[in-house]
Length: 150
Image 1: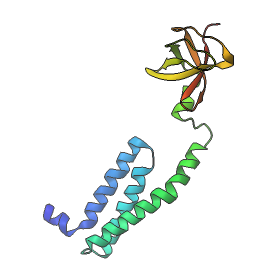
Image 2: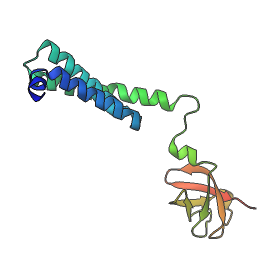
Image 3: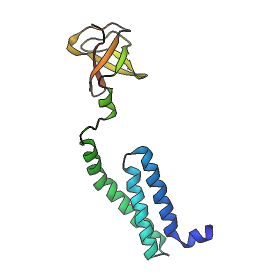
Image 4: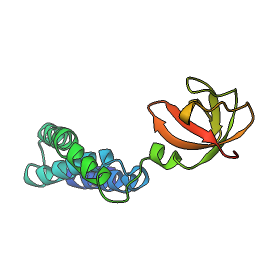
């Protein structure tokens, strides 16, 4: 089998492209998909120039980098601007947590989904430590919260 693969680089490139494309379905970040397209280009060159492995590698790398830096940002922008898309930070809005420390309009800490976040209260309301809170918005690395119970 190894002898056959060493003589048929197109199959090696095709296997690599398939593995990268399948793995992309786990990440959904378009990075591995762009690398898979580069490997697919390498497979195409391997069919045309079977003995020139260095040319295959160069074409695969050039295509992968071109797609990573030219096409991927556009695809990500389209996906992120699609109706109904919410990032993981935006999904935090409306979730509940508990105040780890007293929270004022300037500082505090809250635990949400097992993670401790810097927090400040919405409308300068004072929130006691241990009180249940709800996330109003995410502002950088700080969550803006208000008391769940008035």
